[in-house]
Image (tube, rainbow, N blue to C red):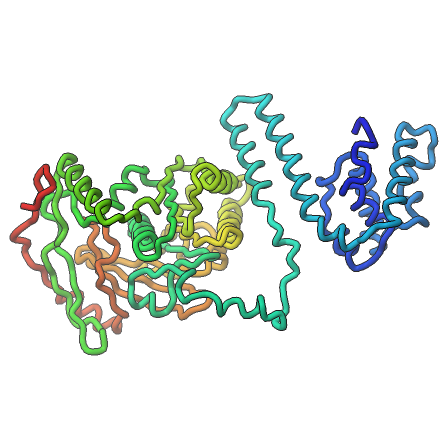
Amino acid sequence: MADDGLLSGSLQETIVAALVYNTDAHTRITAKLVDLNWFEDPYREIMERVLKYWRATSEAPGESHINDVLDFVLDDQQHKKYNLYYRILERIARLNQTLNTQYVYNRLFEFARRQNLKRAIFEAGTILSQSTEPEDYDKVEAIMSGVANFQRDQYDLGFSLAQTDRSLSFLNKEDNTDRLILGIKELDEEGIGPGRGELFLLIAPRGRGKSMMLHHIGRRAIDHMQWNALHITLENSAEATAQRYFQSSFDFATRNNPDSITVMSKDDQGRVVEFLRKENPAIILLNRNEQRAFINKKLAEMEDVNDNRLRLLRIKEFPTGDLTYEKLEAFLDHLETIDNFVPSVLLLDYPDLMAYDRRYDPRYGIGHLYQQLRGLATKRHIAVVAVSQSNREGESAKLVESYHTAEDISKIATADYVVTYNQTKQEHELGVARLYVAKARNEKQWFTVLISQNYAAAQFVIEESARMTKKEAYTDILDKAGSITVENTTEVDDAGTTR
């Protein structure tokens, strides 16, 4: 610092004065919270030695010991910093005469935020002035993301149950406002679904149901919760992702003679006793012109009834292996700043394809990434829904358990809810699958729900679900399942008219 008078009376000097001369409840906390990176030289150099003294003695140096702490300068009048340090000590001694340490503690976050912003702007500006490489732009985004997400919560000391204004705040929340209703009765009744501040994880073998369930959750978010939904894909293209949303929303198939669907015949207790096969109700649209006319007709109808729910969904594609956690944070900040779009649910397809530290054991890297994603859910109060593959054993397992997860089993410990997708070849041919609740942090777990699907129309669930019967009974039902020949199909002409 060229002019040592520049920060005279500043909050920086006030914090230094508090920690040099005062030992009380407020300075004890302040000494543990301050970060040397918040200070500029020569205050950073002074604070480094003062904090070392605090760690060794749990008290401030005070007038008795501050000269000893800074003896590397003050013992040598010829030292080039002697006069500077002498004037700083005189100044903070005067400041201390009227110092309120509680005031200093209360303004600590303000100081930290300002200093972090200054440092980030300087670092980002330096990089941008010296480089035009895309990799360096990523570094800048990570720097700005880090400072944008500096949280005051770390200074929140929590609350006691006696502070009823906070401890009873849960009574102010309406039921289900923070948890997405999946539209699968047996899961909804048990409170199994993505919730704000939580990580919801779906595990499935390769090519089985992962993306389709994300689409289902995205539709439920915008249709039934009016939540903003952000769907990030690292596997399928953005165009293919959008197509599935339109298919499932408007119930159309893109190939001729789609497979018939399976419906469930149940007894009085809601148990499946028989599978029945029915003609697929999806409208068949065989070429792009038919699809365009039909979709435009549906969109026009939505505008007529002032339906804006499609605006609640945002799709973003990142190349496989390109998206880092820091870049994800930066993208969320960018969406909010530029487009005022703040997601209530983040659908991530899928984290294992993100970029993470692979220099050591890759399992550690992916495990740490999932911890960051759960932290993201908590920090931003959003529901994070991620999908992941099962391992090799899970490929052939009739029931995918939590231990079948690929790479790092710590994913299961990190996630709040874990649901596995199960489907044998026989079930695939019938268009049914089983969802097993492998983990539910606060609800019932270890039970299975049977669902009926219509993948021809990109529909993960078609309003048919049931609690699983005994294994032997279910096997008999599968073996006896018949099919109905599809005699008539429904097509649409270029004008979007059914024929």
